[in-house]
Image (cartoon, rainbow, N blue to C red; front, side):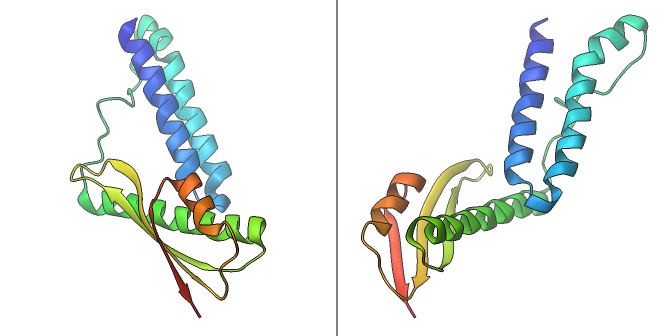
Length: 145
């Protein structure tokens, strides 16, 4: 029973991460695939009871491919940059170009945003403080066009 609960929790975490990292246009497709994944995890004990084996998503699939890890890190960085640009446009009504450095350790665990660079034409009051509060980053550099 403990393994089943861990498997369901792991599938839920994978689903949440996939939903966060998925580009907007892929979101609905990712949700369908993740829905099937969670459904298969939930019905696995019933299938096993009937004698049918369903592959478990835990323990079998491991992101060990370095290019794939790099691609995930790159996609995360792009998503954070896009989020910053949209947030500044919405809150300060300024179009900017954001560039971030994500703090990732040797095992590709994400620790957070390490540095933010904003290219803009003006510096509205409270911009740097807002970015510090939202992203937990103290290294914020403004470049002016």
